[in-house]
Image 1: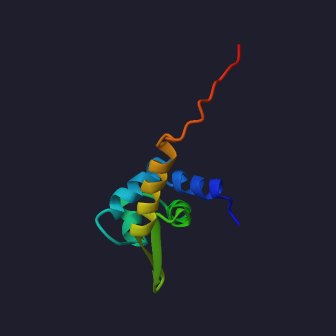
Image 2: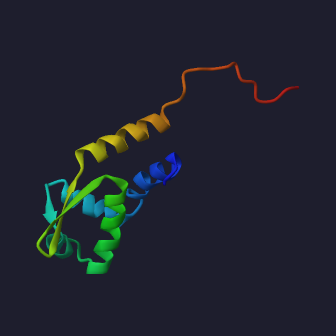
Length: 104
């Protein structure tokens, strides 16, 4: 079972690779078959599978099987979660305890 930090890291890992960003750009137009992504991105089957596994495990991309091909699309729920997570982690806390860094 993932800890909260491990789950959060999976989301951000999905965005930390040029090829995965290119895949997400292609998926912005809607669901695509792996065969189409292979052509558009000039990736091998194993390379595409590797990157799609990371994207699907992050929750940002959904997959469904149709015959021998897998179809992928951006998950509305997963992408909304990623946006909310980034906002949460980068918004300063408003509660202060008058913290003093160093005592003299």
